[in-house]
Structures are given as C-alpha cells and as structure tokens.
Length: 425
Image (cartoon, rainbow, N blue to C red; front, side):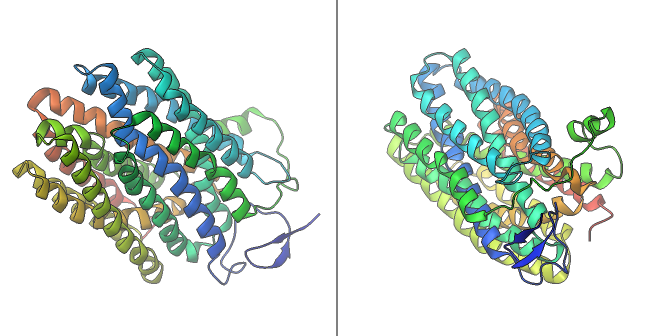
C-alpha cells in the first residue's frame, strides 16, 4: 500500500526520511506543527521549572531550598536519560495508522499535564521528587518524537529553515514560559493548573497539524539481539561527531540554565529585591531573552542553509552566552541581568536555530533517528539539570556571584567539541 506525502502532494511508499529530490520546497506546515508543539511543551515546563517549582520547594523547605532543588534536578536527569533512550527507540519502531511519533506526543503531553496538576497537593520533598520524576518520564515521551519529526520529514537542504521555525517555538516556550510563570508567584497553585492545561493540548494540536502518515507500511524488522542493541543502546559506529555535538550541546545548555535555574534566587538572595520587583525584573529579563532569541532565530537558520555552515553559528552563540553571563558577576544590579538577557538572547537564538540542524546531520543512522535524537536531546534536558547542579555547588563554595563565571566557562567549553566536528561544515 502507498500513501500520500502531504508535504509534497506526491504518492510515495512509506519512508522514514525525506531527500532533497523529494522535497523541492520547505515543508512549512511541518515546521509550524513542531514549533507549536515544542512551544506548548517547553513553555509550561519552563514556567514551572524556572519559577513555580523553586517557589514550591521554598514553601516546603525554605532553609534548604537550594540543595533540595539540586537533588530534584539530579533525579530528573536520571529519569530523562532513560526516557529519551527507551521512548526514542520505541517511537522509531511504532507501527500505527497515526504514524510513529503521534501516539507518543499525545500520551506524553497529557501525562505531563496530569503530573503538574498533582504538584500543588504534594507536601513533602521525597514525594515531590517522585512526582517530578514521573513528570519527566512523560515530558520526554513528548519531546523526543517532536524533535524526530524534523529528521523524518525535512530534506537536508531545508533543515536550517525548519530548525529556525522550530527554534521560534522553542525560544517562545523557554522564555515565554518564565514570563508566564512569574505572573503566578503570588498564587503558585493556580499557576500549576494553568500551565498544566496548556501542556495537555500540546500533543493533540501538533498531531492534528502535522498529519503524520501511517507507519503500518513500515518494513518489519526481525527480533534479534543485534536489533535490540541497535535500538536501545548508545550508537557506536561512525559516531565521533555525534558525541562531539552531544557534549558541546550539553555544556552550552548547562551554561544557560546555570543562571536561569536560579534566576528567582539570584534576584531575591543576590540582588536582594522585593517580591514585586522580583516579578517585574524576571519578566523583563525573560522578555529580552525571548525577543533577541526570536530575532536571531529567524535569521540564523536560513543564513546557515544558504552558507551551508552549521558549526560557526553555534560557536559564535557560545561566545555570546559567555560574554553576557559575566555582566551580573561585576554588578549585582537588575540592569546587569538585562544586559545578560540581550547578549545571551542573541547567542541562544542563533544556537537554537542552527543546533538542531547540526544534530540531525551528525546522526550515525537515520533508521534510529528518534532514539539518537532523544539521546542528543539529553543535552537539553541534561543541561537544564546539570546547570542548576553546578550552580548549587558554586553557591555553596563562593556564593551566588560564582554562578556567572561558571556559566561563562561552560559556554566556552561547549564551543570546543563543536569546533572539532569534521563531517559538518
């Protein structure tokens, strides 16, 4: 049986990838679908992770809040690691009339929403860790398939452009979520419910817009131990550049989240702002990060496609993040965080726009794209966890001002493996 590839209006047999010949024009509908999907997943998550979760932890344990947040982040990293590998592999092999990715998007987003709605009723740190870990399982069940859609349905020559569209949704979620979360600092419970509602519609909306083709015609694979190893383990063949991209992404993302993960405490405990000032500055910084990321994100991807270069924009982004991170180190004032937001936002816009295209082009095996991209996405989720863990250590040793040189060093460290990649220009 054949199916219609709706991105090209041609009748073609089932395929797990798309070539330049098959796709003369950018598949804009697919780009819009993944952008909206990632916006409605990362936005509510970031509103909770960067604002509401720290506020809830502070309510439960005001004295040990920094350490408690680091422990919760560590548990999250372990769960996210396993979820990305297992769910990515299961997604690669899913045969359904709705495609390989769609069922996982729906289950993941709705499951995440349910867990967020439970958090306001949790009254102890151990139980909060359990609920947050289950939430991470569902969250990554939604994110890994969304990212894999770009590898499945976008030809190589359009990946920079579609990654730019994706990055607009990602940036809107990352920064817009923090702005939205800040509005609920006075009513944390309502904030959890509101953001859970947005997350519940993420998967279904993405699936409806994307219209993934059926995967029932996907050729079956024999059940062998070799196939199991290939689908559920880390890639080993032709994967040098893949791991360089992984570690570069991990440290660059960790650099950003070392600051954003403790933004609330930086404002209250380092800059000593009152609650109303904190909410105002947090919203302004997030808005700056979002606007600069939007502007650069819309430009960097198409330019990268035209120049056929992926590494240079990512390396430049890392340097900008490092420069921006040092301003609050020298001045414990709100204006320094605003400067950080402007400079680092430009860097993160370029990074988010081009990095996803770079990731796809270093994949060792397109048949296991979701699993391998899921592992690469660990650099996102892992960086979101690693950054606050390292920041907590810096706070413990030297105080809050230690976060900023730490973030700068992580960003520069991340540029090194990206520079060492050989197979991508």
